[in-house]
Amino acid sequence: MISVRVYGILIDVERRVLVSDEFIRGAYYTKFPGGGLEFGEGTRECLRREFMEEMGLAVDVGRHIYTTDFYQRSAFNPDHQILSIYYEVRALEPIHVPLRETAFAFDEHQLEIYRQRGETETFRLIGWEGFSEESVSLPIDKIVAGMIKESW
Image (cartoon, rainbow, N blue to C red; front, side):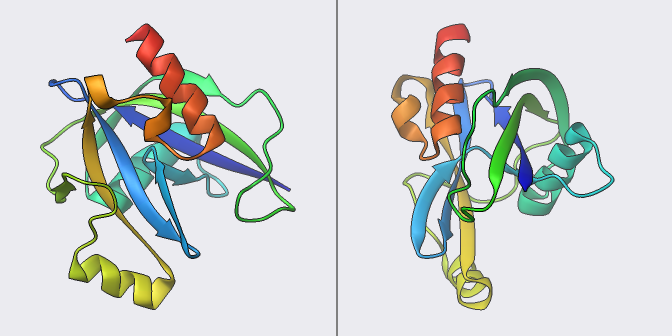
């Protein structure tokens, strides 16, 4: 089975890159915000929905950055192949969710979500000078992080 994932690259006016720090199935991951394509929706619609669900943030989905062009097995389900699509996004309003200074700085509310669902997330902005392929955990995100650093 192929799982389609759609991610947004948001770089703010201070040249900071938005990432999501997540605790999923007992492991920590830093990745770009986004998620799974649902049946019946387009990729841009999916990304707008994901930002609204995860951050309460309306975004404009801009240019396409990258689509996976190699085989990538899912880190969570070995029977699934991942196809990831990345777009540039721009916030249409100020970000209201708490932005953390350090990775995986979950607050009590986020820890309660983890206890209920087995996963949780928080967000932070990484300054341009400190952002690199090493800033993110997943293999495809690392490729995109390298592309961003070269082209922005």
